[in-house]
Image (cartoon, rainbow, N blue to C red; front, side):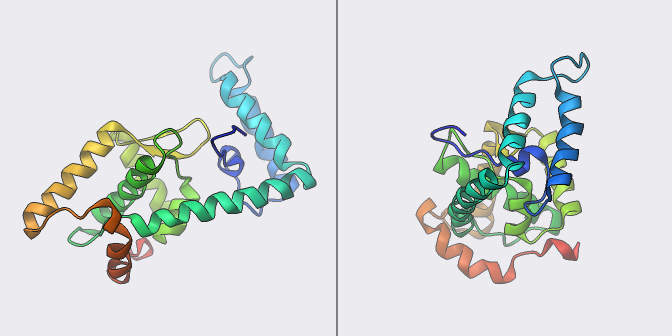
Length: 203
């Protein structure tokens, strides 16, 4: 792991945090075969090396236990982003979810421009979404060029995504006749609006 960044190895291997050794090994072999440098069609040395690094960390009980401890601390820190996300009022269901995803990734980018990613499972938990719903929203946002997948398997907002998010926020300002809340006010706003926020499972 880098000195100033945290790599979610579970996201890299695309496995659940409770995955057993057999599952981790099976998934690693499938992905390693796909991204091995000798594979002329889908080979990718950087991805292969990251996969191998993740496998080495998660396939050894002692290393995994130590990593999980750091992982929980990193995830707990990122969960604070939820309290800083902007309000979700006034949107239809899909627009609300997409705006919520952009909102979280926007705040993450502002907090740490060099390491701004959030994992898809983390987004699912923060927004109470099913995997199916979140995968669709992620696909849509990626196709629009508003988010991208980082090298460590997480998702981050792009410059176009920042423009889109700020454009939507500006539209809300005009619609509601109020000033755009300052970044430091996000926490209180989210607490007030979480009660009425959309639940993805209802779509």
